[in-house]
Length: 483
Image (cartoon, rainbow, N blue to C red; front, top):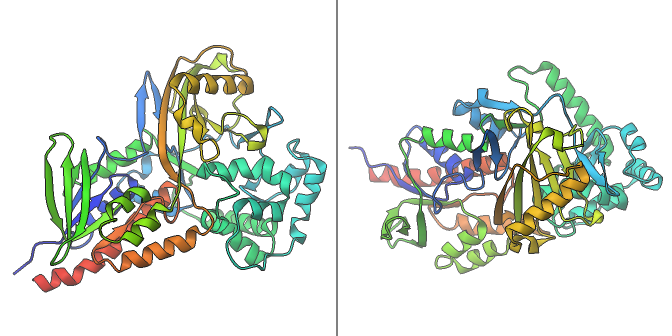
């Protein structure tokens, strides 16, 4: 006599929740899976729109190829041939330096210089800053225990000016955060390891570059650039995943009102169907919460108040993204890179800009250009409350002065992501460990999402898969006992 498979609810239909659902659905004995998404579509911040021949990314536009979990998932779902690399004709990134766009020196892996000559010749750094950077090999490794901020780590190893002019806009921009508060161990642990193992970021970066070159010369399979994206945009990954999940219930407009541990076993989930207005009580053997940490905390308040408070301690920042389309002849700048970043020291109103149609093919019709401007972040929270007119005017003013654009755009598309980017502040690693310990004491419950072990798409996929594995393993004894 066979028993019914365990029932699992995945709360949150972003990439973390869908990756978890796909992993569970492909187990030898898959559970019955229901994905409950509050919004009217799956994918969370991974959203792509088409407009007049343009392909607009409203959220993240790339996956880091060296983090294998994203590319591997694309391969599993038959999407690997649809992955496109960044443009080979244009490479690198610009940085605003004293009001002008200058190239970020080649060979800078966020904060680890692989080559010295580009830093000697860059106009972005003064000669004292260059000499200080050249002395990085002589800086002793940190011996103090405890966490260190991203800003403190970079100033200590590379000097103040290199941090302010290069590292802050590159590293801080990834998290839309304040480097004075971000934890180096939680945001960029690889650089802590480089200092520990090599005593110098420069030595470690050169060794890693040589190793990567050796690996590339012997590798088989497709050769990807550092960043890749689906040909039809990030939403193509979500659409393909959803198509593969034919055995799962994928339910949008489902607001989870409460989550409680059932008296016997499993979990009771109260779900409001926002389309019909009907509220139902549903029972599941296991629940995987793949929402922002503050929403997970609100759901778990009645289950474990201390856990809920810990989840709510993870701060979030918002970001405003503006897509702008122009005729190519309207832009004086050669657009000979993937975009530019803006240091805080420049005191401008924009954080960064991606040249979307330069970075990836197929993003704009021939003779036109698609740009994406980023505003807000943790250091400029007031931007989230600006009117559309303020946002567009600011984006146009900044891009106009930096890229030489005099005429208005063909169209603009504003996307506001409120509380979308978790901030890995000092002590984040210890906080997450404490959260994981408390979750482990609640049978049949797991957490996933970008709040814990990385904010990129590959990290979210890995965290979702790992949570799914733990949940399936925990439910196996219950399933076998029922047979």
